[in-house]
Length: 417
Image: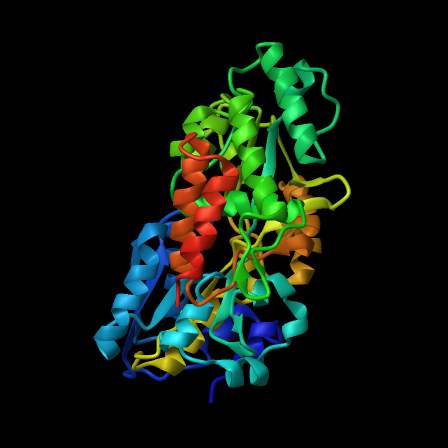
């Protein structure tokens, strides 16, 4: 019987790793799929896995890393491979509905209820694994997009505090542009990919928007429409870098870290990278706050960009898979690797081992995590996202007005089954 009680810190890390399969000669192999970008680095995952293997003699974990854009298709394709496919997969918060419908991941509700004190983990993290009252994995990456700013540029512009509303962001950016401190003060990840949906969802949440009314698509209404209008206006005002329409998050990170933008919306990992001399020209000049709010609606905004670890339905090693994901998501392991991804555990945010050297980020996280909102929740999320990506791109490139583009998104989404 698994002793996953150690997941909640009852015993130490070594004991957690070594309670199963410790008998010599009991050899098992797991195949695990991860993402090769953002959050934990490849080396972080390799080191975590090495510790797990070391504490479990005879256990081997084969790791595969793919770009985020390939992750969903890889997971779905693995289902056909059954026991010879992946045992453990990293999945996005937007996919459990589809995976539950299609039987891609195992229901681990009984394991979670029997072994985990769920109150010790942020609710936003659990939304990564929960669908229709059942758990389809364990939360691992608790992430949202923050507003990063160049403290030196704001000081030169005479701006004393970072913006608290999206309107203030545009106003501050115009001041910086007018003083010729930088050509394009704001940089975004608005390529026709999931990245643009995350930024759109952040601004939609700030406006108090929703995506469906009475089960019908309502992208062309309220906060959703306001969000796209805001994005388009920032380009027309010349304060947003026009290359944002082709950028992903890594492009945004590099532009900001090179000192070529005053503001950037990006994930947690960008903070450590922007303060790494090997990666950045603005070390020591990096500020971070929660994404802004909208007067009369919200004080801050955040999209839930979290990810979880699940065991595939076809895995021949579900017990070992559970042991492995319990190890990776344990508080001890997460606290040890908290520079590129903050833990899912509430108490970690007051632990000096986690906060030291990244106090501003942790302070921003305490606010942002409490207001995280989901992108459209539907088993057809991949199709809905593809529709939104295309129509938002049409608006950003002036091929359609925001009203017309989102009306088309409504029509296309309504045809989905």
